[in-house]
Structures are given as C-alpha cells and as structure tokens.
Length: 304
Image 1 (cartoon, helix red, strand yellow):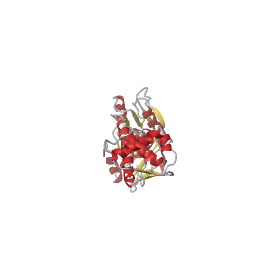
Image 2 (tube, helix red, strand yellow):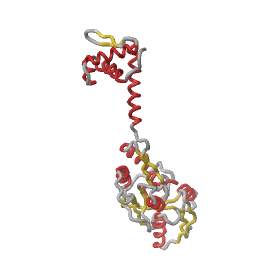
Image 3 (tube, helix red, strand yellow):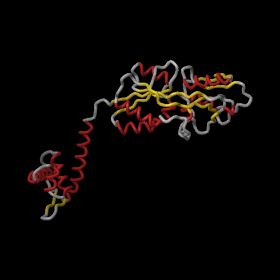
Image 4 (tube, one colour):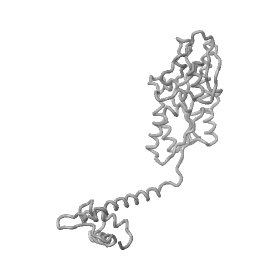
C-alpha cells in the first residue's frame, strides 16, 4: 500500500459501483469522467491491487474490490457521523419543567415522546413538588414552566382547564358508624385539601386530619390500610379505589383549576411546545368520563 486513503477517492469508488458506470458516477459527483477514472487509478495504486474489473459492456468487482467495498462504505459512514457529531452544540440546552408528581405520572411519557420528536437536542429536566413550591421556584428563576393547581395566594397563571375532585378510599373502607371523616392529606398549601375541607364544612360534616405527609406514598399507605379518606382529581383515580359520593354522605367538592405559570414575556419555542403538548394531553376537562389510569400506582395519584 502506497500513500494514505483519501475520503474523496473512496466516494468515487463507491459511486462507480453503485451507479454501475463511470459516466453516471461522474454525474452524481459533479466531476468529469476523466477525473473519475484518474481517481480510481490513484486509489488502486494506493491499495496496491485492482478493485474494478472492466469490460466493454459492464463493470464488476475483483475479489479484492468486493472486500474493499465493505470497508470503504464503513469508512465513509464513520466520516459522516464524525462530522455530524462535531457540529452538535457543546452544551445541551435544558428546559426546566415543574409539575406535581401525580400529573407527571399521568402524562410524562407521552409528553416527553412528543417533545423529543420536535427538539431532539433539548433535555427536559422535570421537578416534582406541590404547586405552591413549584411557583416559588419559578419566581427564583429555577424553572421555565410550571403546570400546577391554582391556590389562594398564588400569583395569576394561565388557565388550562377545570379539574373535578372526588373522595377516595380503599375498597374495604366503610363509613358505617363513623361520625367524623378521617382525612389523609397534604399540609396546608394543598389546593385539593382546601377544597375538600371547605366542602365538608359547608355540608356540616365533622372531619379530622388523621394523617399528613409530604410523600404520595405515605398518604397512599394510610388510605390503603383503611385508616382514612383522601381526595384527588377524578381522572387520576387508580384502579380498584372507591369513589365516595352523596350516597355515603360525602358532599361534592368544588373543582380545582389546572394552570400554567411561566416567566413574564417568555416566548421560548421549547416552552411554547411544552405548553401545546400539555394542552393536548390535559386540556380536556376532567369532567368527561375517562377510563382510570390503570398504570398509575396509588401513591402517584395524590400529590398536587
């Protein structure tokens, strides 16, 4: 072998074989036919053996040419991949999205798939907390977009849809003989808790918070053991849970309002795309009858 392999010579060789002729290869490569012939001759000199067998009617590969063609295509493919990789941004763009954990469990899979189809080089970073904490993070510049539940004291956001709330309990739970409603809820600042307590007060029902937790799983355990009643969005109720209503003495709960929050004047294309995707997935009011989200665990249907 004399000399180094040149990518341009490899392109000529592959083009001759794929086009089945020097004239067609020259047209594809925007070269003259004589230049193509000279390039092949130079490549064969470098390799040290004939690569193409020519007749008056056709061209074919020599045994050495058949083997060399495999490597030539691999080298050209790697060359293309190396150039493409070098042109990627040095730092990947990251979009910071906040949403309660139950909604992340409900819609995150489809959202990420749709988002990556539009912005393959953008990395979403998801933060899951209660809505009040997420809006505080947004105001500190830590998040680019928040999907959450409107709550008294929060700054105005962009309305998405109403979210009907329901009372839930374990399959074995019974209200017989209970004078007071035992509640498993989040701490103050939870919109679902506020609406539920208000409904009980207006109905004249006594109630008692018997369990609080910052963890969805912690609240789910209390409900699963039949120790308490919870409240959640209707569309998020897991398979197998009871939905309690007036027949068991539980009053209707005022719906929550799903909202978006983003920095003032934000017009980032990636954020706009996330808003549009979430509007498609969640924008239809939860009042519509929907099948329960069978893949959702009990713990992931509680946080807001």
